[in-house]
Length: 530
Image 1 (tube, rainbow, N blue to C red):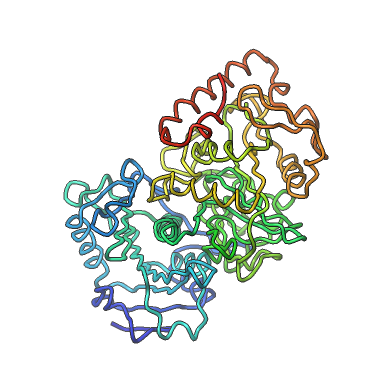
Image 2: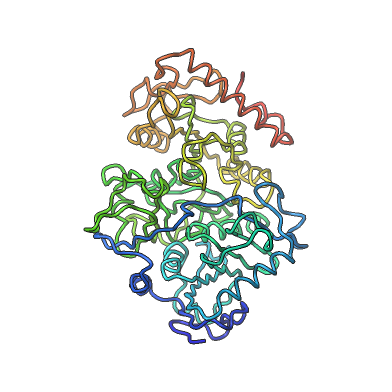
């Protein structure tokens, strides 16, 4: 096997049982990977310099094709069920052998990375990719070691990415030709049958979500930023709720846009890059993200014309168009991505019913209730088969990536919020004036104004009234936001129809409560009233 680039001689691919590939290209510079992707005809270059690629039939994550190997070291810890689906060691070993056999005679791109900006909790992750553009993606999304750190790099986990290696459900023990499988004992992840690059980074997130809570570090599906007075804000939420957009604030410094830990030293980013949804992206509304898309960035499924001009409004391939770029492409990003303890914790929800207040303050018990509920709407395109928003509950605002029981994460978050006296807020970035198809999506300018008022303390000086159904405290005024926007019922043409929909959503919350019925009664009673 021919090796090129920076190849760690002490721990090469033979340690991953890969011995018959035709060539391995190690830790190439992102500019080299960009050029090789073009040479390989894996993508095309846009006028702004970004690499534009297509991901085929998989334009989003495939949570139903995700498995965890059931073995002795993790068996008693994993929250088994529809999210963490068990796979036997024998089945995994057979699938692993299939991937290794698939690699024979192929040119591979190898990338050694770090996950975790805090050196005390850092994980060494090696990616083996079949295409240059996937290797560029992980190079930009994970943390780059210094050249001197690559010589003796020994990975803690290895991700074997084989997008065109298809599983046979009848013989491979999968649900489809797509598979994402984590083996915590062998410290190997298999990703096959899908070209969607997000599976690579989310597999690492799942690993961190298993390992770090066992070391008393809270792991979080959230973005984070820092204000001028060093105040830290967290933004929890699933894809499409606004984590990346709202944390990319020119008035604040970005820590990271998606995955973080909260330990004794404060907050730290797991990643070295950002993965932004860019449907309807505009320089006016999201200038930092817009300006970050240049050479070195990867655009998934964004429409481009023959002149290389990008059309962010076109969803011809998917609504889940994505931009991946290193965090340093954001002008005021914090590098390394570390900060102090949070002052504010914000739960973002995209309410498809259009009945939740656009912003409300939560008590600690209400915060735990909404964290365990994780209500939002799956936005079109973020998962296969989702073509329009669907109401859903995802514990911890990230159940697809959480291997441990939700109560583990909720208990840790509650303890840290109490210890550091963080204020908690629920922000609805979904619909106003009616549900999906009737009302309109909340104006981003209004959402930004409300969040700014919460973070800078302005809302401390205004009157709050409890929502009659959801109990959370709703501010009666906010600079830059019309007062009628703050009360969702007043935005509906038919108040009786609002009451009907609000009651329906409240019932959904209460029905979902059975999933965390073992929580303390004070938390259970913090939900909506019917």
